Amino acid sequence: MAFTHLHVHSSYSLLDGSGKIPEMIARVKELGMDSCALTDHGVMYGVIDFYKEAKKQGFIDSGARKSI
Image (tube, rainbow, N blue to C red):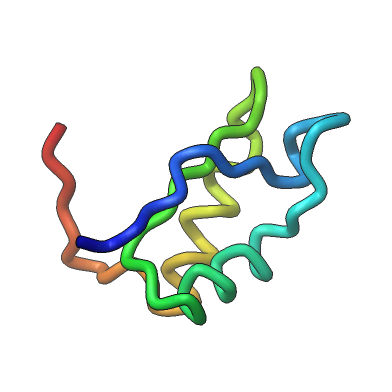
């Protein structure tokens, strides 16, 4: 079973996170994880950057679909 971080804050989570999105995605890939969640407090500013960076680094397949 693969491990997935479900509580990760980026620099967009003011006063609580300092992680830069490109470095976070690279580290997730380096550790062999197949997914990761971005859970910034009270904001969604980083969502688009997170998605774009994940796609740029080949973490998200352009044909990927997610059912909820």
